[in-house]
Image 1 (spheres, rainbow, N blue to C red):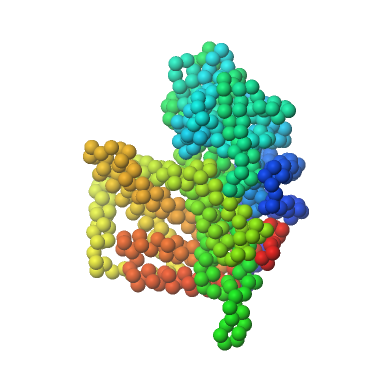
Image 2: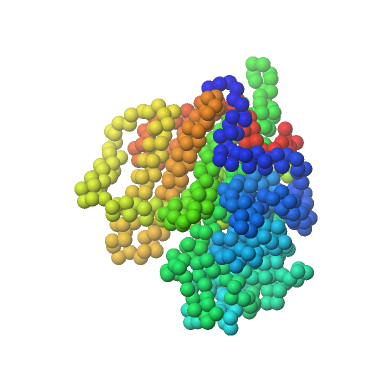
Length: 620
């Protein structure tokens, strides 16, 4: 591996398909004075973010994801990239922009039809119509299907009601201060029947900022982070909106109260509706990645200048990043950050292709939803752990607000539960895997089925043999890495399927059957996402044209893989994929890779190309 690698060569690989847009966005960020927010009171911070929103409008970037027929640019993937890069700065701005142009605007675009697009989209893009995305309720966060706000059709209008406090809309971005309209998710009732959750455009304030009749608005107050976002609560008491307020792409009501939908099943219609909103989940994963990159850049820059304790032989103070313990704190996390970045790039490209295709591809949509759920969960958990490690790596100075890490920690903490609670999301991933496993099994011939069962039984027997011989692989062998991750995924999933099938064949309560296997369910989903992330990293290395950068990325990938194996070595040992000798070699090789990559640590974070004012602190 070359002693010096040009960070720009790595940046080219990291920037990928939207390289030109990333370059444009970075240039704009470099020319903009960073507006500190860590010492602002809540109202001043909100006002600052609102002003920055208007500045974003002037750049034209909010138009990226919207349809060209209404003044947009039709670049769905580009809109997510633009959102991601906001994650290098004040995360309150990123989230508020996401509420306005991603959630609120995205709901109108993806759930509405031409009449809504014509009426609202231009004003949403220009910020003439600031809005909210009112889905979550106090009593129902993850369980959206059972929201209790109602929209009852009566006399040519829908009447929106909050039946009790548990049904109030809670934590709604833009609601406390700036929003004038909300997309409200409610149970649609027409005639004597409820048709499930639908979305409605509901005015909540008049032009002078006063609450509309029947609407009650309350400020959520101070939060642990993101205090530049005006989160609020909403109640509705007999609020009447016209029939046309229903975002009617997937369901409509005629003037006489007749309900119709191109999707007959209420449950399938509900999941189709949520699937159309997947862009928000993809965006959160990307924003978390940007915040993680920023934290690592700050911590590694600090680690290269901070000195502690003297060498016994020379008396010279030692740079803290030369300590193995410090390297282990940061470099495996940096390697996984690279891996997740490449997985996010693939996810954005998939989103772009699915949402710009002329015809709906239901299979591709399901794959997208599953991958978005998994990458969001794994990526935001990684952000939480890595930002904490970066804070610790900077000692007491890292606890000072002026050095940005405490703010990053506070602002990203909620990412693990908004746009989907991570544990719930991984269960969605596992559900999709089990469905595919069942379908694939059903497609096998009797002979192939018998052969597969025999192989699984033989594998289970071999695992139990105390004298089983494991051939020691070359630890940098990429084929071994790929096979190891794929084998773990297949084994965990097959075991889960057998476990659920055996329990289901008895008289057991279906809830108890699934609940008792939740640990297995979550492991299956995590193993699947780990494999996808590795596949994305390998594909990115293959795209790298610069030999020195490619060699460095190979070593970064090695560290990502082996540190992942090290973290889960109990499973690999229990299931006969490693023996104790090989497990010890993995630990030793992680140490060796940290030492090998130490001279390249600054290059690896510089390659993120974060504008200097966003990473320069008193820690440097």
